[in-house]
Length: 249
Ligand code: 13P
Image 1: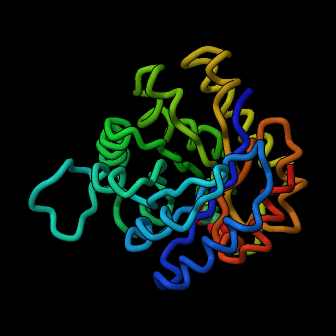
Image 2 (image 1 turned 180 degrees about the vertical axis):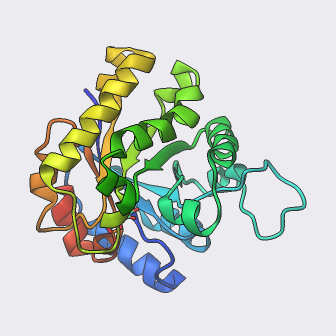
């Protein structure tokens, strides 16, 4: 059975003290047993948040890692460094990183390889901009993102990946994909995985929805057969809302 996952992406929010307080609140609230909960914190917070979290259901993620293993890359944080904090996951390919920091498929392939070498589980993000959705070519666009990156992995490595579909037009806009739009894309992604790696692998891959998913709409989104959870931005900064989302399956 594929895993249900609710991952928070705190983005560039909270001080260390605020992050610890938020992690503690989530840690104390979560009682769900069958959901993998992930806290995607800023790099500066990871070590402290790992120490704060005692709830077995909860793991910690970085929001990025360097495309190089180590060396003279001022300001970068390597996958090995992330792993050495006790974090188990890393979010890769978020649209904000693609858009504002020029992350290409070639860069993401280097990051994916380093994350996997260091036993981090990548949460790989994909998703189309509004113009692509309006042109009706979103399925081809997203499947092409996968083909250029995670579909080049070996089947053994691919099985370690969690996918997050995040339509860019729904991120932080309060505009959510309809449940039909989410299900249609998630099914297209699963069909593409089946074509590439076989149906058994496709059935085991967790595909999360992200983009204005919140305490009000999570239940409807998660009820779709191919939606296995969420990657949550704004609503992950409030422990109460985040816990409602965790309990929305
Ligand atoms: P919002 O939930 O704030 O729309 O952000 C979604 C997201 O980008 C999670 O990675």
